[in-house]
Length: 176
Image (tube, rainbow, N blue to C red; front, top):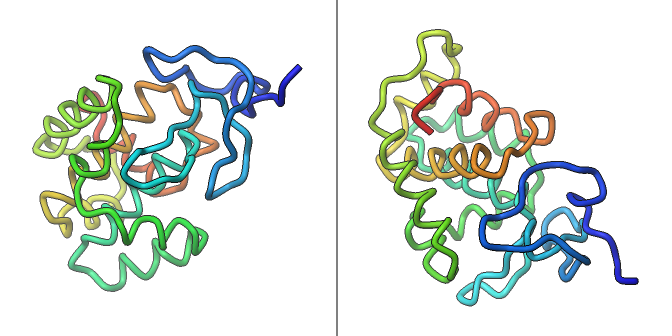
């Protein structure tokens, strides 16, 4: 018997489409949980194994880093680990982030995010997220929209998502 996948063992999330859950085959470079091929990925262009939760967080923080508000960026960086910030600083765009992945699901996530990046925010969203969203570049919105789309497609539980991603998920409502 092989090592257990954290996500399969805890029943969290939905497997990455086109992938079968099973024994853990990688250790997440960021959080160090074990995950199977259905709950983690290795990009051929950036040789590291990353679980789906950390993947979504990296995209979120990469988007926040594109804000023109130093205060918002500082607040977001303070709320997450240095590993997330270091990984996020390497991300230039959602398209490039997913370029080395073979599965079609990643392109569908970016396409969904493109729709959400121009959609109106839900009126119930808090002022802090609205301010963040308005301070972002188009690429920043697409990165955060991709994280929200990934969280939705994979049914990632809110309690496992970083705060800014939880708020983004609410703010983008039906669009992502």
